[in-house]
Amino acid sequence: AARGVNKEININIPTTCHRCGGSRAEPGTGATTCPNCHGTGTENLSTGPFLLRSVCRRCQGSGSVVRHPCVECEGKGRIVGRQRVSVAIPAGVEDGQVLRVSVGDGRQASQEIFVQVRVERSRQFRREGADVHSDITISLAQAALGGKIRVPGIYETLLITVSIDKSTYFFHRSVELYKYTCLAFRCNSMVSPFVEKQ
Image 1: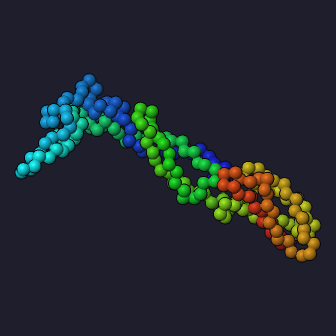
Image 2: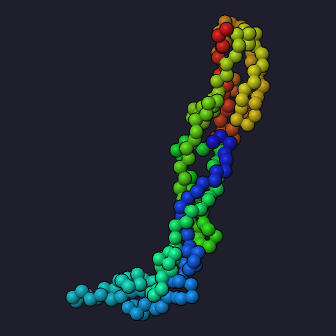
Image 3: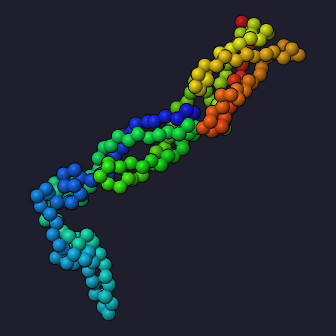
């Protein structure tokens, strides 16, 4: 979630029928002009003194009828197909965020789907607002004398030098790593060391 990733997902999406190519008719046959509306796609309805124009009830406004409908799509011209889509998850995405993704099969105009992102909980990192936090345990010797600790970062393991406040016997300090800022959501990786009991 912090670095971004491309995820492959399978979706059900309406696509052009591969058997009839969207013509709605069986291969080798075709559509004929609707005998009801004569290809206009509309018909006139008389309701007393008024004359209303509406969509043709026989051809549903297409202006043509199919006498031998495609057996694959049942004369609809489209079928619901299974498609594998690559979704680009942007860096810094939040749990529950919805992404709009354009998809298509290359034979028709692109369609849009909405993908809700679920971010898996990390054992090492936690997110607080725009910041990513990590808790590091140090030994009693490091708490008393200071030293260097290795901190698992988002991109790589970091070596941090910690200094001790001489005015206190208890070490509890946060170290800000400004040089390892997460550019996606402008955050600082935070490390909170805690003393390990011995």
